[in-house]
Amino acid sequence: MNKNYHLDQVPDIAKEILRSVSSNILLLYGEMGTGKTTLIKELIKQLGVMEIVNSPTFSLVNEYITTDEKSIYHFDFYRIEDESEAYDMGIEEYFFGKSWCFIEWPGKVENLLPLDAVAIHLTINMDNTRNIQIR
Image (cartoon, rainbow, N blue to C red):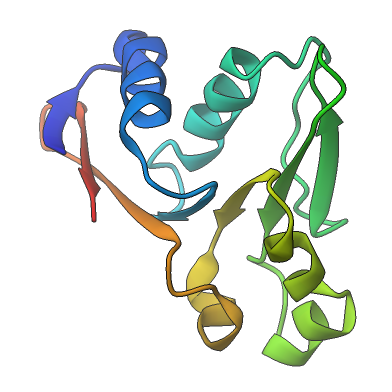
């Protein structure tokens, strides 16, 4: 997928992502303000989480439980200084299950990521729309 979208189209983009990806681990790349957290919030909502979703900037990971009792993990590695911090928290344990894992700032833990993870790249266009590329 490679397309431009307006922020009011995030629900449609999230549906398309959930329908088309081949992995439960999604890596969201993009500069600050490109909409990574906004997209993750919508993905988590569409997967059946009823509670308010917040970015785990200080805790590194938030766990959410869907209405059918499944776990979803939202990681934000913006503040880590070294991959060992993620390794010490047991990041690889999260990847072995079948739970959805949404990861912001995955470049900070590049060597710890599963090879089958799906990369999502977000950028802001000059007209303030967003571009999404899924690889």
